[in-house]
Image (cartoon, rainbow, N blue to C red):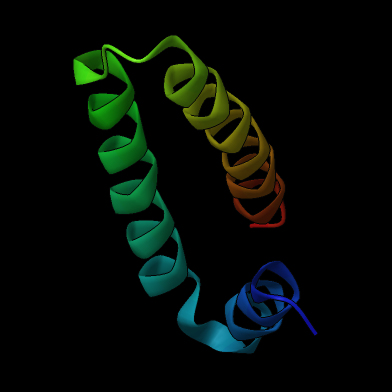
Length: 64
């Protein structure tokens, strides 16, 4: 079971606010790190990770 599946189960069990807050913090961290990054390859990797995590965040948020 990966982190996304664990977070979905935690959100369904009643702690959706904590799960969404933790994921939002991580999204903000990745976004700001990507803005400050001067390495193009690293920025591209961060953008892919941000896109994946944003889709997961939207899915969890859409459940409630």
